[in-house]
Length: 378
Image 1 (spheres, rainbow, N blue to C red):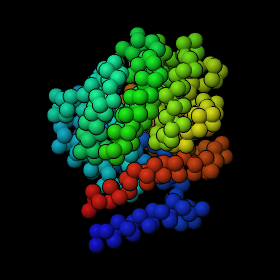
Image 2: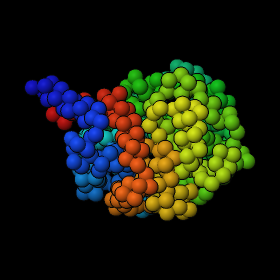
Image 3: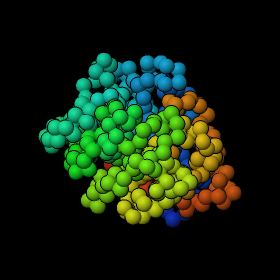
Image 4: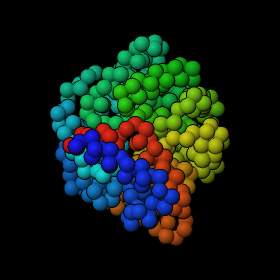
């Protein structure tokens, strides 16, 4: 019985995915497609009403987890113990008709949401692994991370960092030991091992932060960050190499401004950088996720509608609102209504939404999230 239900649900899913006019099959298809383009952060060690409504009513495609609530300076956000986290993620997934991307920043070292103090294994930084530059060490660290995430029903890691350690004093990359190396070859070797290890356990990797954040002198969480004078072409090498070898999972954009690539907009909002460079010149065919759209580099310089419009036009597939720089329980509703308004006014097209929806669904299908979600619910 269980197998027949899974098979029937998968058949329905594929029919909907392949339908040339999804709206003819499902009257609320546009809301579904828009929802799949949103990844939302939330407060609570259990499923709070806001995130439940975002999943069941606004059909969001992903949720992002944190261990610390920055706006309220509260040490508990979504994670307290392994048992609690496992229960939370299962409950989130059970609410969603389409399986969620449940994502986390579990890079290791200082950027580490699953801390030993809360019962999780100790982790090692990318910088430490890069200094060792030993495939066995990197593989072991990545497998431990992947198995921990798998046990917690977290299917996407917002890692590994593909930034070069061009500026060791960089407050958000170098000083936090998040980069494997200043040498592109070392970075490439280590992200290959990391991504392969994640995939072994069914965890989706996310290369970040395109087109390179390693040379910056300021933090995009806090302010506008201009890397025009410090960025170099070699920062693209990890992406160029991975994409050339067939990488098509996920890439996260940076909010950095690089006048050499776009004289008007930071990377997340730049069609020249995302559609022209990442998709066009480098040939990336996977899912593009924005860095947190509430970070000050975007939120302090662009209105919400402008930022959403530019990001979608640039080619971003998933708009991430972490709700952990600022907290807005209505952010999903606001983003949804803005996208619907842009569509109604023909500022963006349904074809553009369809492209992102299909990439998102293909990634969920490829990682078998539909089957995992169904079997974990029954």
